[in-house]
Length: 173
Picture 1 (cartoon, rainbow, N blue to C red):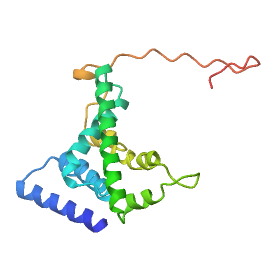
Picture 2 (tube, rainbow, N blue to C red):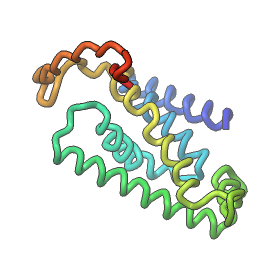
Picture 3 (tube, helix red, strand yellow):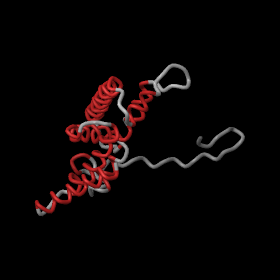
Picture 4 (cartoon, rainbow, N blue to C red):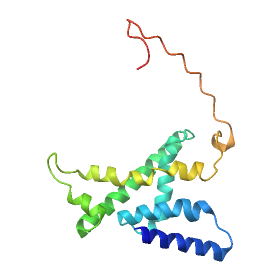
């Protein structure tokens, strides 16, 4: 895996050098981690861009900037990503692959000792969304403190002071 990652990074550095310039986010901060995840899970490199789109859309639910339609789109993306992963898990099971996913699938079974198919999905899904907020936000220099369309986000009401704990069982949990 390390050698593969080094080869991928070197190829991107060479391509950037040949072009004279590159977009850091596209060429490195997005492509290398996503390529590593796809490699670990045995997914085709050709799907990286679609996986990035699903990932970014799914993560958008936590940025506080989506309206109801945005949440619906993000939920649809999460479901599409899950369906894609289920399809690839089924193919990996049929091929009896000798890799991380194959090992997880060999542990699916009845009883308390085995994993369920949903548990395997819950293991392979998070890498596509973990860190995407950092990848798109902090590393990408996204503007902070702005809502949709560049407008400041609405002000939140001040938090009420905590109630003192006492015999009545007051206070916040």
